[in-house]
Each structure stands twice: as C-alpha cells, then as structure tokens.
Image 1: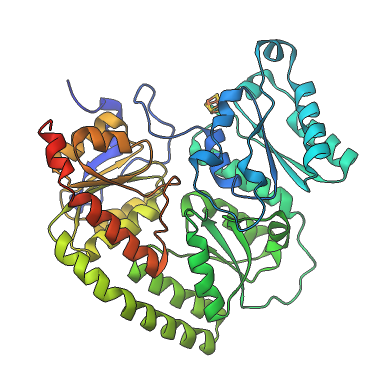
Image 2 (image 1 turned 45 degrees about the vertical axis):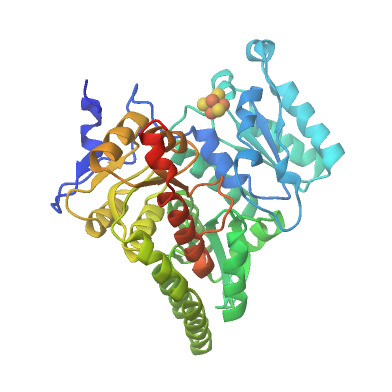
Amino acid sequence: MSATLKERDSFILYNDKSEKGLACNQTSVSGAVSQRACVYCGARVVLNPVADAVHIVHGPIGCASYTWDIRGSLSSGSELYRNSYSTDLGERDIIFGGEDKLKAAIDEAVKTLNPSVIFVYATCVVGIIGDDIGGICRAAEKQYGIRVIPVSSSGFAGTKTSGYKAACDAIMELMGEPEPECERDPLTFNYMGDFNLAGELWILKNYFDEIGIDVIATITGDGRCDDLMRAKGAAHNIIQCAGSMHYLASRMEDRYSIPYTQVSFFGLDDTTESLEEIARLTGSDTVMERVQRLVARKKAEVEPILDRYRARLAGKTAAIYVGGGFKAISLIKQFNSLGIKTVMVGTQTGRPSEYETIKFLSDMGTVILDDANPSELKHFITEKGADILVGGVKERPLAFKLGVAFIDHNHERKHPLAGFEGAVNFAKEVDLTVNSPVWGMAREGF
Ligand code: SF4
C-alpha cells in the first residue's frame, strides 16, 4: 500500500531546484488525517496568551481542553488566562439554543472575576445551531461597560489559519478606531507572533531594553489588554511568527498606517540580522551601535560553546515538521550552522513564498511537504534516514515509535530557544537527544 494518497501528490515534492511549486494554503484532503488542529484551536493559540483577559469557550466541554496547560505561554503578572471557562453545552442546548448559557457565563465572569475584557470563542456546535454570539457580546458590553469580544472560530469553518485570522480580527476589534494622526516615536515597536514560550520573550525584551527600543505591546505572549489597546500608536510592527500574525500586521498597516517587518530570533545569524534590521528601522546610529556592541558581546559568549556542540553534531541529518514556514526556514539555517543537513521539511500552514525559500535553502532531494499526516511523516523520515525529528506534541510519539531522536519546538516546550541564549539551548537539546544511546536500543527492541 502506498504511504501517500494520490490526492496529496501536489502537496509533496523532492527538491529538484526547479520552478515547480508546492500546493499549500488549502483545506486538508479529506481522509488524509491532517496534523493540523481546528479553526477554534488556531484562534485559541493566538489569543489565549493575553493574560489578563477572561477567555470563555462557547461550546461542549471538550473544546475547552485546548487551554494553558498544553501551551507553555508564560505571564509576568496576571494568571487569569490560565483558567479555562466553558459554557459546557449539552444535548438540550443544541436543540433549544445555548444563548442563555452564554449570557449566564458572561454575567458570572463579570461578577466573580471583574475583567476589563472577555473573549468569547465560537466552536463547531455554535456555528451549526447559530447562537447570536455577536448580539450577546454587544448587549453585555452595554450592560457592563467592558469589552466583550466575539471570536468567529467555529471549528469546521476553514483551516487552522482561519482561526489565526479570527483571533487577529478580535484583536483589531479590541484596538478600535484609529487615533487622529500624531507624530510617532521611531523607537516604539510592537513585537508580534511571539507567545513567550518558556519565557523566551523576556530574553528578547532584555535585548530591546539594551538597544533602547520601547516595546508597546507584545502580541500576544505575556500580553495585556491595555497594551493591545495602545498598540496602534507604535511606529513599527515586527513579526516573529508570520503564519499567525502576517494578517494582523497587514490590517494594522491599512488601518493605523503602521509598517511591518518580518524578523526571526531563532539562531545566531537570524537574531543578529533581526536586531540590525530593527536598528535600521529606527534610523538611529546610536541604536545601531548598541546593537553591534550587544551582538559582539553575545557572540563572543556563545560561539565557543556552539563550537563544542558542532564537533558532536556534524554529519547528522534532520527532519522538520512545524506549524509555520518561517520557523521551518530558521530551523534549516540553524541546523546548517551546526553541520546538520535537513533531509525532510514540512509545515502545517506554510505560504508559497516560504516554500520557495525552503527550496532555495535545502539540498537537492530534500523532501518538502505541506499539511502532512503521520503516515507520510513516517514514510519520509524512514526513507531519508533522519537522525532527529523537530516538531510538536503530535509528532513526538511518532519519533519515539520510530526510534528517532526528537526535539520539541512547539508551544509545549520548557526551554527558551530564541536569541543567543536560545541558540545554545537548541544545540544542547539537539546534542542530548541525538547522541543518546536510547534510540539505537529502541530500534533494536531493547
Ligand atoms: S471547535 Fe469543533 S473541531 Fe474544534 S475542538 Fe471543538 S468540536 Fe473539535
């Protein structure tokens, strides 16, 4: 039996450096068992790190299992976001409607938690029965004088990317109307698409402080409602995770005239280039000098450590399967810098331009795939003989069953992998796993 469905052929290619493109950014092939999560989950990933908001999931209790506990986003203050509130719809509500339960949930949240902002997520069931979430949220805003914002995230209504957009639309709703045009301070930035996994946002904030950048809002890692409402006054938007934030950044450019720039803080080269790009955006020679001093100091600290890992990792091969294309690109570069060749690379939500870059960066014969499933991942990891798989919680069991080393680069991870410090953590984790004797034993059945 073939490892791939015929309908999936256009989503998979062996890199031949030709012009041939990869199909992507489409709904999953029915029956192919995509690794993607649903629309609602996409919205939750993006919005849930807003730490001082109440997040109410309007749907059956199972949907609420996508919560802080399976996401490693950290907060420096409010812990409100760590609670999962659900309207717990049951059979009776599906027949007679769940609006009363939603009203009661909002009333209770206001009375017991005193929030300034409540996000209400739509789920599959609510999309089917047609509860008027928007009307209920508007009525609650009038009654309580707070922001109650619906998130149009019915699980079946598109792909996980549609969920990112639904969350971004909710953030735009919170940001509100443009202010009368005023002079913007060129040192003010919003930092978007970092979810403060394992606290890595705080590493970067140290850099921003040192070079003199004023971060108005972090969107959405360690996020605060007030900061989101002030974000429209920033001079620049910089984006780490393009998959989730490109849409928001382009809407903010249209509505508030804030230009945006893609950055990446994964790996020494990307971190250096991104800091230099930020300095260029400010137009300040002083900021550029600070960046150069910071980079020189950090590189002097971490390069000797990385050299030790390079000696232990040279010649290994890697397979990558992650959410967004930009992260995959950074990972290929990071593996290259460690002497590791990428033999398979795929993403859940990569865009055509990102796949072009992946083709450019990876070697002839590298397997590139969009919206893969476990059967395909198993087939290509085995065929290409990868020593390590980098992915998320859904890919981890596959690696363990195949007896292949694994490194978590998703929202559950516990070690920061961004910035200069993160580059060392990454090399250390790769070394620990790929050079562990356990994989040989696992493959031989102990
Ligand atoms: S929104 Fe739909 S697909 Fe998503 S978790 Fe709930 S029931 Fe499942």
